[in-house]
Length: 369
Image (tube, rainbow, N blue to C red; front, top):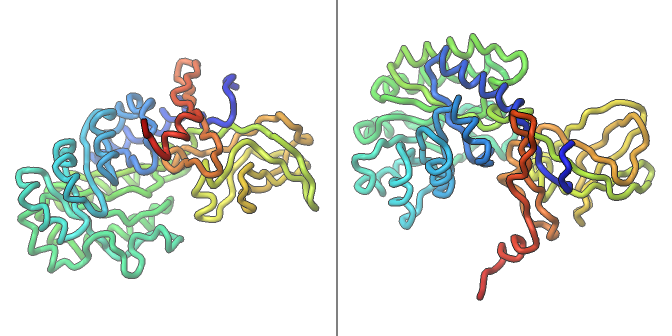
C-alpha cells in the first residue's frame, strides 16, 4: 500500500490499460472512435496513457473543452446544454467539432460558427436509464431535438449528430434495439451527415459483454449510413481502475457496530448520496460493520460490509471502483480535506499527482489581496 496520508483516490494504470485495450479493440473491429467523456473523469495525469487508445475527448463546458485540447491528444469535441455568448468564441478556438443542444442555439451562433464542424444533439425519446434524474429522454427533457421534420430544415448547416440516450447500459440487446429505433426514426437524416456520436453510458468494457457483437453492430450502422461513428465512454473507460483509500477513525455501537472513516460520501463520493447507492468493498468473514463518513450529515453512510476480523482504529479500507463521477464532483462540504490523488504507475511506482491544503479551501471562497 502506498505510504500516503488518507484519504486519497488511487488510480491503477495496469487496470486502466485493460480498459484501454478494449477501447483499441472496438476502434479496430468497428471503426468507431472513442472519446473520453470528461464530465465523468478528468484526472489528466493519466491522459497520456489513455490517449494511446482513445481518439480524443468530449465535453460539457468551456473548461472541459480547454482541458481536452490542452491535455489529451486527438480530437476535441465541444458540447454543452447551452453555450453563453461570452464563451462561444473560446469554445470554437479550442475545439474540432461543436455540437449544439438545440435548434435555437444553432441559429444563435450560426454566424460565429461558420466554417467550423457543427453537429446537433438529437433526443430519440428512448433511453436505458433506471433513474428519472439521469434519464435524458425523460418527459419534457431539454436535452436535444426530437422532431425529424424540424431537424431536416437545418441539415445543410450541420455535418453530424450526437445521440446520448444510454445510461449505465450493460445490456447489448437493449443497446441494439434502441439503435434500431434511431435508424428507423432518423434514417433519412442519418444518410445526409458525415459523422454520428452514439454518446456514452454503454458499459462495453464490463465482464462478459459481447464485444464482438457490439463491434459488428456499430460497423453495420456505420456502413449503412456511410458515417464515422463516435462513442463517448466515461465509466466504461475507467471502470474498476481506482479505489478510495480511507482510515478508520473511531468505532461506535448503536444496535450495530459502526466504523467512522476519514472520508465522506457527500464530499468525496456524491453519487452514492444522489442515487442512494452503497459503496463497494471486498467482503469476507462474519464481522459486520456499517461504514460511515465523518461529516455532520446523518446519512453519510458508505454501506454495511463484512470483515474477517474486528476493525480497529487506524485500519485502512479500500472503497472499490471509484474513478467515475468522484474526482470531478468532490467538494469542500464541512471543510473536510479533499482526498489526494495517487497514481499507481505501470512500472510499479506510486506518484501523488494532487494534494489539497487549507490554502485551497480558503481560495475556493475568496482571493482578496
